[in-house]
Length: 420
Image 1: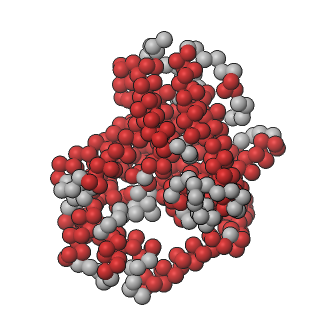
Image 2: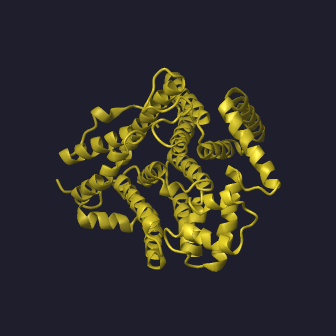
Image 3: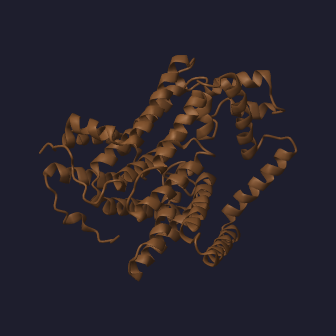
């Protein structure tokens, strides 16, 4: 996989194709910075899609892409559960976010395979600029949006930003290890990896930190499982690196220590901690599933479901914890799916991830990277409902869209006539 950057000399076949490429390129550059531009592209990209392929061409591509169909089935079913929803306030806000998933077919069909390199590099460059600005803010070299110095993610919520950094860190690490490139380019990827990793672990986003660490473990297994000696050496190096992060970054150390204290508090019967509240949501979800096993409480009624359970059984939770759990989401995408859509909703969500892991990607570099990035989200969904949070959902749509593009064979050409 060469890292040449041919974007300015690419032989575009039509003006429309040129407009499409540069629209996508601008989108990659602005994703970490502008939610408004992302929202605009949700409507703009489908227009480009139909201009490029026509209605018949788009429908044919949709029919031939099982991943898009599995996403449509999940979103369609969750929308159907509105029929037995009692309160639409929360449902309305979440449902609007699912429009972001339209980016999957837009990116998956508009992007040509040969565009992947410049677009991925553009996204990493945007993350680099964002990370540098965040680090400068943290070091008090400048101030962004009147945020305090302790806020290492001034552009968005720390949980959201941690997913951006996790995706950037694991991608740059993978390219650093796998690509056969000269030392200068490897140095650039090493610098990106270190920058993203430090930014990630200086933040309060434990979701991204956990997802990244699990992805690194998966990467070690993928690359070194057939060489036990090398596998053990790399594993020891990883553990030592993790310990170094713990000792050298006080913020990460305090977050790890907080988790340990949370577990100790939970053993004493208190749910009034971050970990304790997440355990409380699991207990509530179990009771809701027993009451509404197949179809759930309906899209948006998760707060009502939690309140109904607590009226019958409080599990020893104090009033502060009760007030919290009935006023927030369940901090877990899988729990949100099973609570709102029942076992059917959970199965459809798992089918989305299964269809993504089953994608037939010929090129090993793209295939392994796709698996790593999907694993980042599969793990992250255990601690936050990432598919109902705008910024993480946008990056998820990017990952899925690029994975769809990577399934194109090298000799891929448009099967249906384009509109000139």
